[in-house]
Image (tube, rainbow, N blue to C red; front, top):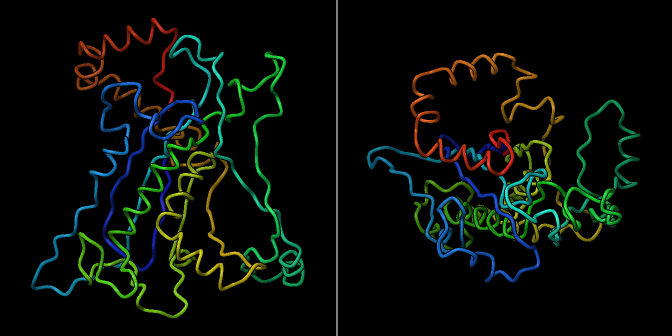
Length: 320
């Protein structure tokens, strides 16, 4: 499982997990067609109806204690994505078009900030997007023909790329966090919380920038789907506040959120035996245990699933 998390320094002692589904579909389908292939979906699939029924429960605050919320840690999985690699889950998938309208945009280093770095070579310089001017849009369409040279998927989608429905899922999660932990200006706290347990009080005024360090620590592994999922969630949580500050700063300076990541082959956000060889021993011990045999070897449902995977042409245990 690929995870990322972030911390908000002003808040404390509350952790929860949001799990988002994997899904595959034509990106250009209208939203009302996204979840019509089957009559019902497991809760894990995060259909719009299922998402609307979810909320973060309020904390049970002891009446006789003075309590405040100082920190929140959020751990999520990415939203719906394209397959992370080629496989044989169903026939004909290699011939269908995988076209993605959700793109990754990047900004080049700006000249004003490069000059600032050159002048302050011995000091830490805070970059704020000054003078970025334009963006690059990343399209996976350089290899379209012939088939033996094209992308893994027919079309312009990257392997494991976040889909529009994944965007919608993560945006909903960000707004759900905002409803729970942010006190809006000139209003009572959002439904489900109390005034002294809000994460951010926008009535405090001043130059409040909860999306900047040290108020926010945003961490992800270096995968497009996880990085963008985090970005979208933060948009749902802070988007209107960032937009307001962007208008105040003007066209030459953009609010900047720092993403902390690492080389994928060295990262520790998912199991990495290259960094911790002991994980191989733990896995071996687990697979030899009586509990594992009872649940995953001798269990009839597990046997039927293994037979199905073999009929599809492979072992999918390592796919995530």
